[in-house]
Image (cartoon, rainbow, N blue to C red):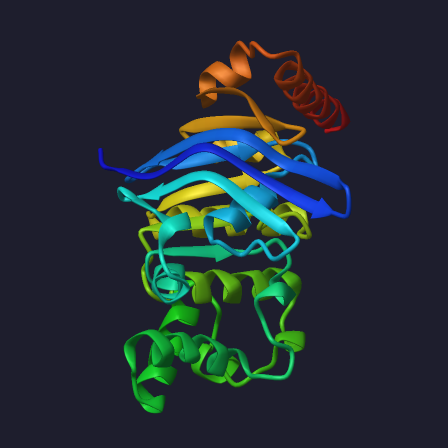
Length: 264
């Protein structure tokens, strides 16, 4: 398998006057072509910061150190104009809150169509047709009609489907899904996970829920306080965790699962 993404000794620091906040510290991570790799850890541990650093979306006073090797190139060394082509065309991201990627004042069809106009120079008619096709791909009924609606006219689960459609528009080689099911109920969580599986694309799936990660991913990285504390196959992580923090995550998942079974 081709090694698509290799993160080497990556750190993200925020500088404020005489204080340095180390959000991510000395992280290493690899995603091979065709894999779905999980990144799991509690809220605030640095998962989203790591995802944003891959996309080079860390704003000042944040600074990124180390290497982000994408198909052999270090993304931290390329010009911003080159990076703009990497975003969307090669690497794309589904955000936790769909309102982070959807503009409330534009119709969803226009927002998806804009991706084709920007990256491919497609005509308005062609790009609108592509937008409707993508809405159909993510199982939104009456896609041509719904493309004319605004984000507030969709439920939370439907908005997330629109976000997935937008992220997948250019058929990227890597999709980063950052907590894409957090704000959804259990039924919609399952539906979004099934949708992500259907795309059959290489993915870095980020979540605080180790059960979701284990069910979807072949390998898992466990993050605590900005560092990777354990890595292994999903079976290894769930059945024989080595790090105490990982063991607590697994134990919590098993306790919740046991309680759910008792209540049935």
